[in-house]
Structure formats: structure tokens, C-alpha cells
Image 1: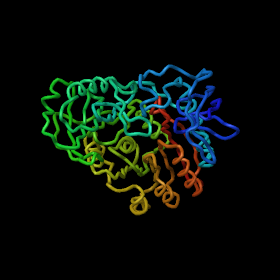
Image 2 (image 1 turned 45 degrees about the vertical axis):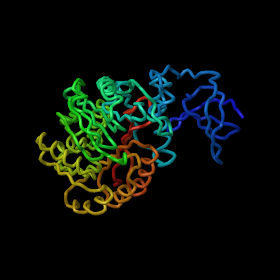
Image 3 (image 1 turned 30 degrees about the horizontal axis):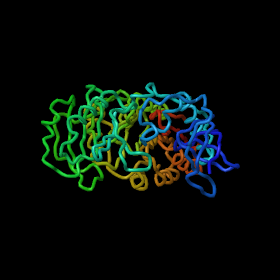
Image 4 (image 1 turned 120 degrees about the vertical axis):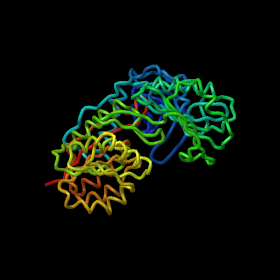
Length: 426
């Protein structure tokens, strides 16, 4: 049975929201203001899901997607929505989620930071290879959609992708995944090839004509994780700048993909921290020091906590190469360290904690911080629902949210990067 529905809002996750006899229905690839004919695909007690079979009246927010496989590729959900409207709806979702789940109303919301580049902003992209198809998975599947380029990727990545695809297609490589990143300093691409078997393929010869800064090959027979590096050619490091610091790391180490927005985010973290030079800063999930090192320059001391041994090594080298002597990095899970090592800082003076967890949030660390009571917490998040959950723990433990805002790191997608500042109630 088909229904005619008016789409009135957008949900975190990308779907449009409508109602059938008062019951919420989620419809992908729709926009607020659309009137659509839809077919239901899932019925639950509290909501339904459906697919639009006909656009009866288009929303004024609609625009023409740039990508020829938009809707089939699982990478983007909002290319059909004009970019200013994307930012507006992300702000609505962010504010509503903090209020509904976290019961939080910050004293101040900063204006949302739109990306200077709505397209061509990604400085690193992971591609999938399957049965001669090179591209990305379809939504909710492991079937690869074949592409020639990606409009949200940096042009340097698209050029390298075309060169690599032309050089390797049809070869007995064992290749199932490919990461390409741009080294901002040189403006050249670095590639990481993930293979399920070592076929003895002549990688160096095949890629001799590609304009790569360097490349590596990693072996993972189970097609999981980063695997073991079995070959490296030339320089495989990505170099970028943020907060007055030059960072360098291998292509396999996590870093933010929107470089210009990352710089603005680091500046805002420093602003929220409000350091006077007497504080000890603890940066949980510190990575290669992206926030730790700019903060260390303004603090008495900075401590980075990171579970990845490779990232810790890179962070220490970045501290050394940038002459930052008051930063130390420790390999440990954030929740474990907060429940143990944090107590050693009781005599260190004012404490400021930076939280930048993965999408799942950090419920263990948030709960522990509420009882350990640092003077200030700056929480950077890529998931409003888990952020709101963790904020409810912190505000229930004596903290107030003094400021919040979002950065659109990922235009054309529903993902939301945000920053929240908390201070201990007096």
C-alpha cells in the first residue's frame, strides 16, 4: 500500500521525517517541504520506514546532486539539499538532541561554522574494490558502486584514484581496499593498498607513472584492520598544519579529513579552554597531538592519552619536531586512565580536560570525570546522541554547559561535529 506524505523535518541519520495518521515515518533522500508518494518498508510500534516512489511536489530546499551515483552510493545522504539548508538543519538537530536527550541548554550557542568547501573537502578517502568495481558500498550492503571520481574528495585524491585504477585494474593484486590521502604541505597524494594475499605483484612498476608522494601495501588475509605492512615506497607521510603546529603522520593514523575546518576547530578548542599558563591539560583520545600540542603552548603542561601505539609514537615525534617540551603522551585507554592515572594529578594545579572520543562517546570517562571534578571540560563530538548522553552524566555531577557550537566537517552527509564547554559549578 502506498501513502502520500509531507516531509516536515530531517533526522540525525539523514532521513526525512513525515507522518502517517500521526505515526512518524522515516524516508531517505527527501527534504523538508517535499510531498512524496511512498511505499512502507518497515513497520514498528513507534515508527515506520519507507521509500519515496514519486516526488509529487519538490521542496524549495532541493538542489541537483553533483554525483552521478548519488542515492546508490552509501557515502552521502544530503546532496539533494542546498548547502545552507544542510547547515541549518544540522544546527536544529544538534540543539534539539542536547535538549531532548541530555536535558542541556547551554548558556551560549555559537553560530554554526559552515565548511568553506561544500565539495572537494575530504583530504583522505577510503575506497572499496570488489569484482572489478572501484568505489563505495551501497547503503546497508557490501556491494560496491563503481565510480570514476568522488565530488566530496580533494581533486588531488580524484586524480590519484583515476591513475591508480587505470594502472591496477585487471591485475592480480589481491586488492580489496584503498586509502588515499593528501599531504597538505606538498599537495601530493599518498596511497595505502590493502590486500588479502601477497600475489607477488609488481606494485612499483605498475605505479611508476602515478603522481604519488609515496605508497604502502598492507596484508590482511581476513580483510580486517590495518594489516601488516609488506611494502613501502618513497614518503608515505601526510603533513598538515593546525594551531601553529606542523603535524606529520603515516597515512594509517587517524586525522580529521576536513583540514580547513580542523584548523578552525582547534582554534575554538583553545578558545573554550581559556588557558592562563598555569593549567595542566589532559587530552583524552589525543591521536597525533592535533589538539594537545597547540594547547601545550599555552599551558603549564599537557598530557595526551591515546590507545594507538602508532599514534603515540607520531605524537611524540610531532612534539619533538615542533619544540614542544611540556607535552607527554601515554598509551592507554581513556576510561582506564581516567579511573587510575588521573588521580596522580591532584597536586598539579588547575586541570582542564579535552574529550574527543569516537562516535560511541565515552561513558566510562564521562562518569569518572564527574567525580574527579576537573575545573573545565571541553568535549568535541561527532555524534550528538552520545554527546547528549555523556553531558547528562556530567551536568548531573556538578557541571554547567557554558558554550556550545557545531562545525560542519562533513558537508553533503548528516554527520555533525560539535564542541561543548563545561565548567565546574562553584
